Amino acid sequence: MVPRFSTLSSLSCESCQLGKHTHVSFPKRLNNQAKSSFKLVHTDVWGPYRTASTLGFQYFVTFIDDYSRCTWLFLMKNRAELFFIFQKFYAEIQTQFNISIRVLRSDNAREYFSAPFTSFMSHHGILHQSSCAHTPQQNGVAECKNRHLVETARTILLHSNVPFRFWGDAVLTACYLINRMPSSVLHDQIPHFLLFPHQPLYFLPPRVFGCTCFVHILTPGQDKLSAKAMKCLFLGYSKLQKGYRCYSLETHRYFISADVTFFEDSPFFSTTSESLSVSEVLPLPIVSPSDVVPPRSLQVYHRRPRVAAPLPFAEAPTDSLPIP
Image (cartoon, rainbow, N blue to C red; front, side, top):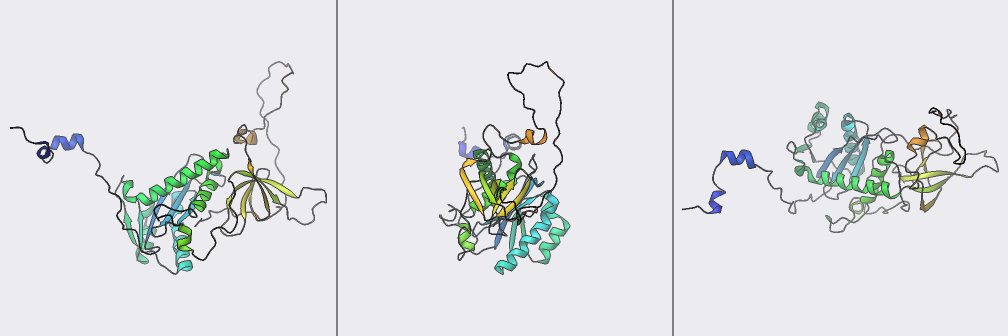
């Protein structure tokens, strides 16, 4: 008599296990979200990205508070910086909130298990929960957050035709905005308000990423007929100063200023001049279409070295800025 299918599934078959074995299912979390801030913090490292940012970063690390889902994001040049960044993050939480992190949940990456990192966790009584190897589902909160950040950064880069070398600024801006948007996980509450209920949502009005902006020049002793502003690319917000983060294509430097005029309907990069990646390094010669000249060997034009001039306003710091 042929057995039922329900009984066949319970039979022990070594060949079936070898040939048909699959991942186990991962059920959704059921109301086990932390009841207080920083009781549980999720973290994950993203990268490396093939194109280094304008300041040489190729990675970023996120720290997500399970209670508020507020995210801190730090750019990194290599994975070895993780321990130093976590020390900074831990000290900031203790100082600003008078709270100690209880549990840190990460994947099985080696940098989370280095001797200094393990010693620091043990010394401060932090419980380290890690996922099994090749099982990102067990670190799902951080994995999903990083995907959300990268998708948002990619979208604003493509929308404004900003070159991919500015991906670091895009992901910092994405983190800044996501922290200030309603979250379905929090039943449409805003992460920033859960941690900072008495602070305004924005210290400065949000602007369109990648738009053209003009920064007022504050350098004294300017000629009366010289330009009063510098044309820049808008790239986000500053945590340490009440100002906008702008980039000058002429000086190749970042600046932070509050005296900025925005042309939000005018992207800095048009669709035809997508990145300036070629013309900045090798300026292209201008040839009139009507001129008929015999073909010549290829010539490479090199830009003359620039003479460093005094900065018209405060230069932005070059290190990574956490965006809470």
